[in-house]
Image (cartoon, rainbow, N blue to C red; front, side, top):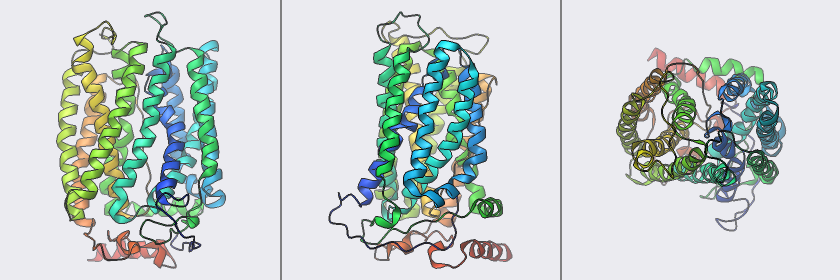
Length: 462
């Protein structure tokens, strides 16, 4: 999501320590905690397959509404952030997560999809607000040499929500009958409590102009453009080859969730085991984010080399994991569903390839998404997410599409890093580092959009 070229200069608020309330460390940790409570718990609930319901139709229809409104209203998130600032924007977004969990509590009793679909449509709007605020914070606070570290820190805290959220249905449904397929009411109530807490925590986030970076420079107060300008300029940016190269990766980064949650975890395991699996799926994400964050920030002196090595590692690992997924998928289909596995009784049938595969999916997800975040952070100060969702497509076809999308993104990311990510001098000011990618630095311009258009024209003429 782009913002207008003119940014407001930040007020000079001194940092007394790296752990000060106005430090990037604390503020990134707070936004991580907000996402721990809201999208983190949302991930845990959707990771159960079908939102914790025996019939995934309600969840699938609700998620269709969610991603539809998110794709439409995602363009409004920046405008809302521009008007209300981080606190109100994040709070409005977080409150819709509470309604989402409540709609499935209602569905537990009424078996009526209407409320769930309506709540998810609102969640799509709220999520666009939340991720606009999160994106502004994550792309403006870290210095260029520590983007991977801050992304990893956020990812660890965020995905700890999925880990804790995985324990919630596991513990609260542990002593229920083995054939129980729907989580109990208390499960949804606990999720609602966490999401409500996240809404309150969002009110503690400082505006960017009150935050000072680790190198002593002041964060700028990013001002998103108005909605009309944003819509027009995002369309114009599709002429930029850098954006075109990253589209497959941005698309793939959310595309595979439906397959992994509903058609792997949801079909292969019973209710209790799905909650157990989620603990390790999101725990694997914490491990993966630390590993790829180290590679992208510290493995080599050259930033371009670090990026290319990161792409190579994720590509090799991703190819191996999706190949394992293909071998697993050939064993079942919608017409020939698998026998539900139980972590207590299935023995090696559970602890072998099925569990390892689902754990590996979580590991790959974090590494892939952190890599995409890092590339976007190396190119510009903003990001946007593309997502889509399919249902009732043959399971093997879903796996192949997900594998192809991620595989296609690897060489394109490598080309993007090689051509556009510049190696920076650690002695240069941080503001120069942040725009070393060759994209126009909006803070130094009266009209960032006009300058970006001129740079694209120059590239075309050259």
